[in-house]
Image (cartoon, rainbow, N blue to C red):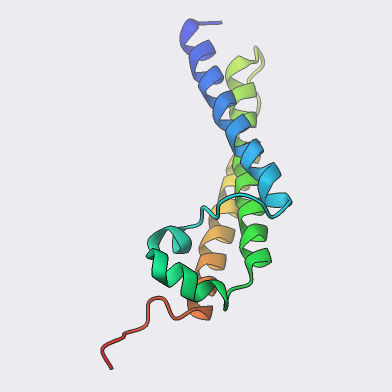
Length: 121
């Protein structure tokens, strides 16, 4: 095994562990909400929307996304460390499903809230 494979596999394993730790917090509905709509909102908008938004649904979205990311990074780290070349199509399927789910659920979130509506009326 080459040194580049060991270094890249180690970095991917650390990313998988970080995603897994955040996944464990979101399963319990703890920790910060790291989704795009929440990051893009100002602090005042977040406080205003907090009463309207279903927080459990946001944590559910983050649980699915970060759980999928943890699986992808773990699989890719194992791919880097292993002597046998594992097929990459399972990782591609997981990535595709996570991206589609994240986009659809973010669009649904934006449609439920007023955060991007025109306030010049």
